[in-house]
Image: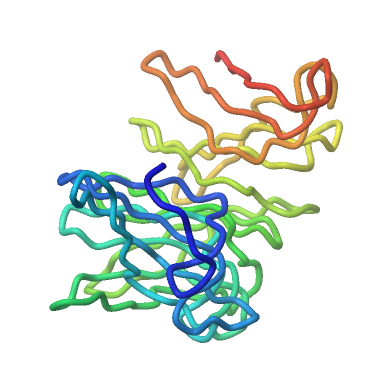
Length: 257
């Protein structure tokens, strides 16, 4: 056991977010509630775990307020080469539809900067972020079902809507990038059987095309995929479903092109 949350300012209830290591072996993550605000609404913290005296010590890097900075970060954080952290918050922002944020080490603390909020529709991101080699960020919005890009231009981040999954809500998980610049993910609903599907987003002529790679049937193959996907060296995809399978309790699957 590395750390037990105490249900107070240290954070309450880590959710879907993966943990992230830095080069020195410290761990970073988020909780959906708790923090210095201890508000009943959308708060939460970003935290760091550091090895200390044979154990691990937790420090809160930032406590979300649920305002313009965002709140309820379901996803974890990712780290850039300068030691800055990036993530999404499900609530907060100008239209209370969530934010994408950056946390930067600043003296003895951390400074939060909102890179974008979802003021034009969609939003409420459950999944985290993915970097490409040029430092652009990719993510998804759950409500309205969107995939988006944040491109750094002249010191500012520009939001680009890549694709809208019409007719249903969007992915729970983060997007996965391959060496050719394609993005992969899962959607918990939709598809031919409305049990979710695996998709691929491919850049094409300044836009993006979507390919439905596999539709889950809700039977032995699984149903309701809420996970990210991972790629092996041969281009095979791996993931999980929350439901389905022989006993109805979910499956681990492989998709082979």
